[in-house]
Image (tube, rainbow, N blue to C red; front, side):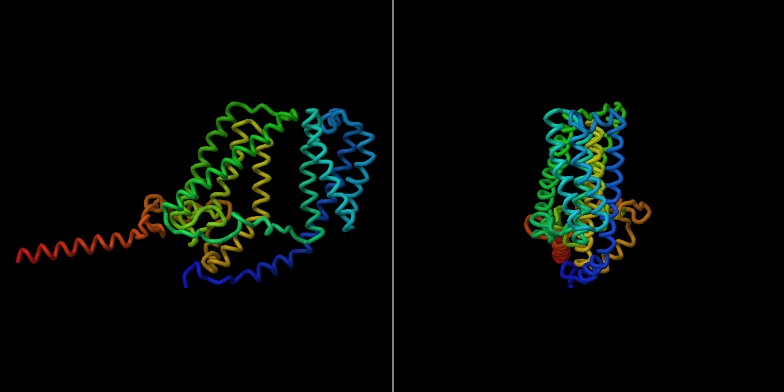
Length: 368
């Protein structure tokens, strides 16, 4: 049985573990609402006593009018949600989301209360996640794994096609997550008067980090194509477990590259909100998506992946584990790959050797 034919052996165990963790997740959601209630009470106290905080978070809005609605629905509602009252969870999450959208519109139109918009956006995301945990005991992140993000092996193993597809995927993903979204976030940051001037050395460091992280990203993507006969996109995953190239040192080099690239873009353009976007995005990916990815790898590769996971760290590189210098030099010769004509490098080499031997025998016969 080939590695791609291995039957799932850990899916049931993974589901049981999710069910067993539900009480803990519900507790985490309730604790978030408790902390949000305390933070909301402290914020309203600051609004009353600190004028600069009031101007930065409310702008020209009337504090008394806002507090008359906000304190019962945000502070008290969050406190009741922490007590596991389901209707309070719905009320607190819905109100926080509504206020966040309203603050974004207000700050964008008036250029005031930008900090309030950012804080309420963070509170809305937290409330939605915590509310889902309290109500359902889990985040249905598996519903995100659809279309191009659903896990399945690549339909082709031809290296030239894989490398072309990998290049296209990198261009699209980098264009969306490293150009378009940071540009939008930075425009909001400037519109809300939240920009901070970065020193020139920080900008230079951001450019250098972007270059290094991009090289790591390309190296990781090529390793998937060369050694795994797949692409970075989940819907065209590798047929073989990739343990070479940067994957010899750390299990998620592409994720590390993406996080570093996002932070580097923020440093380079002088946007602290883009840096925050990279950090929050990495945390959400690690929490919501990575468990599904590793569960899929365990189902497809079984103990092979378990051994690899024990040997190689998820996030911290271990450079003493394997020397991949040979992987770099042999990148185009050792891959499970076929050329454009469908003939593998090994088959070509065998044919050439056979032809050379036949030629030598013919020469010997003529000499006799």
